Image (tube, rainbow, N blue to C red; front, side, top):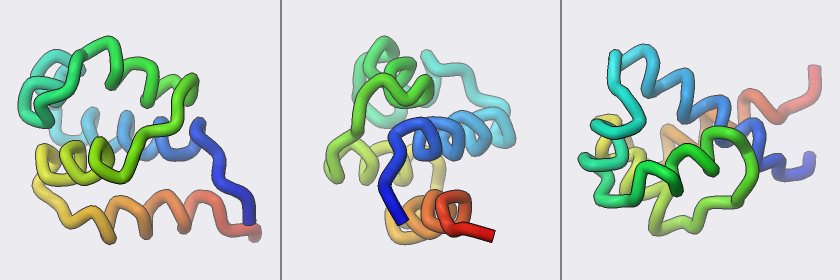
Length: 77
């Protein structure tokens, strides 16, 4: 199983939409620039663990749960 930035971005995008948050609001809660969040969601960049931690916290979840969702989307089958 290979890591794919696009899957991580899609998972974060879907979680953000379920919470009804704009990029502006989520990036503010996570203390990261909105443009950085946009690049993560589009799969153009690979977020650091620190950034993923901040995003997970801002979404009200544990980092391990966010990683698990990405893994579930990445798993074959």
